[in-house]
Length: 245
Image 1 (cartoon, rainbow, N blue to C red):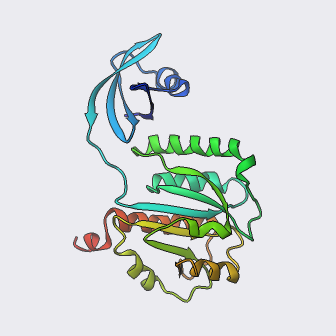
Image 2: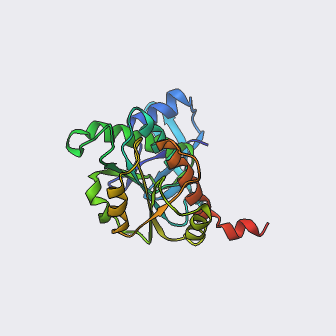
Image 3: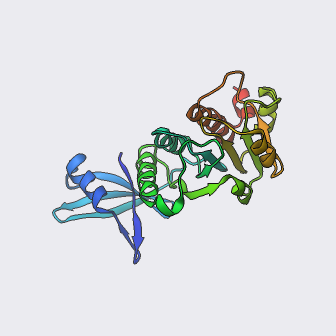
């Protein structure tokens, strides 16, 4: 069943014009067809009452929860090309709570918040559509574009930086992740050029643990998918729950 995120305006649940167009023209809904609405983290079952003008009514509150038990924040050094669109989409699907875009020393492409409002609008559209597709009840947050020196402003219970020069092992990573349920986790991923040693040292001074993502050098976007999948798994089910089967 299709899901839409709506606004609460003067105590009324309101769908935007794009969503109404999608319901009536793309999905070709008819009177009495049902769909889901999310507003203020609450999920409702709605029914189409009329098409022209479009009206709907709320049938009942739905008791669903597809969110992770915790808060994952991806601090992602801005990649080149269209990789960022894909990372944003898949981060939503993996249950991530927030993305912060970071301008690091090796970013080929740089963004400045004052000139990137149109991009943020487009990114948030990707977030909304991906959230509706994967049945989330919370929209992932993305509104910050920061310089690398500001990574310490985002507090968390645990913070990690992925670095190919790390001397840690995957076993060490396993020990760090097995008890992250209910916690706030930061993970810092570099752009195509990775991080300089100075940037890694700067992160360590701000309580970031240097971690490895295995023996192979991964692309920037693959690194995001790898570590976010691990975090999602450990936070959603827990490795010990998994091992009981």
